[in-house]
Length: 386
Ligand code: AOS
Ligand code: ZN
Ligand code: ZN
Picture 1 (tube, rainbow, N blue to C red):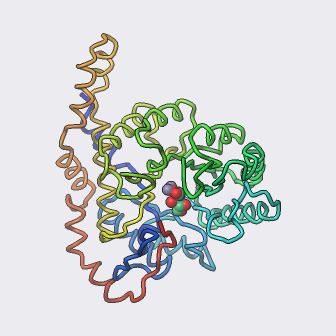
Picture 2 (picture 1 turned 90 degrees about the horizontal axis):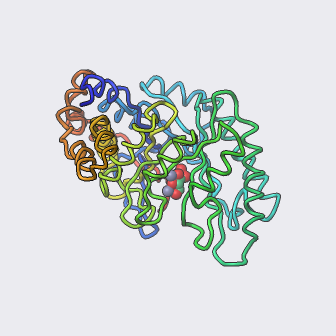
């Protein structure tokens, strides 16, 4: 059996990044239901993120999205984050909300549009310099809707060219995380549709380029843990965008739709030596109908629970069963860990960290919700419609 104190230490050391856009109002293309007390600017998003960290102890960074979180002085924003007891995390670029990008951004047939997109990405690296962020997270909405609309191979060439320009600008200790997505908003062909395409580009770019796995970006039934295992083997897993999906890119709370899948993913992370700072655990979610801060706390806890179960797998017993070809026993060892109620263990970890064992109850008692509802009038939309 894994050593309990080592498991607890590993859980206490976990870092889960929350996304700034999860704190703002969001919805589907049918309706955005505004909530009271949501942040009106990036500063207030950071103040909310600091609450999540204060009650969980494992959410010390917040991902920014440019331009949704545009400010005059990013150094000042980073200093404000530090005052709140947190830090700024990955910088997410946006090359999808401008009329110019109708036919794509860095894959666009027109060189002037490609230049504009690359300039935005370079600006994001400038922002990383100011905030001290390590990771530039790239997700491209580029693709085509109709066969023949554009040349699939030429688009790959343009993608490689644009990425290389941004890669060349990365400083020491900075990384580029390339996210793939099977579908949406392009429906016939997406320019970075799968881990293989992302991997091929990252491999050519160099070691500062890594693949990011968004759990909502696959076809139904995809074995995501296999992708995780493969990328880790190749030293190309840069991180995760965690969320849950029932149908498509639903961006629901991680661990809500399929906690077993999350456990299997976390097991491959642990098994593959990926439980280090090199693999970023980020949330990429929108809380459209539920209260946002408690939902983000719940999401962090869901990741912690899956991680705890993954750490509890009796790996010696598992490999003994695997070596002897004992199919049922091997499966049982894995399921034993998955079926363990890890909530008491995590409550102990929290107590040892000086935290309340029940972060959601503690948050609710804190009066923060009442305070922001009273103080903030006219909350900001996350910027993300669907
Ligand atoms: C889009 O589908 C991707 O998941 C992005 O990672 C993300 O949701 C968006 O870029 C917000 O920054
Ligand atoms: Zn994502
Ligand atoms: Zn997504």
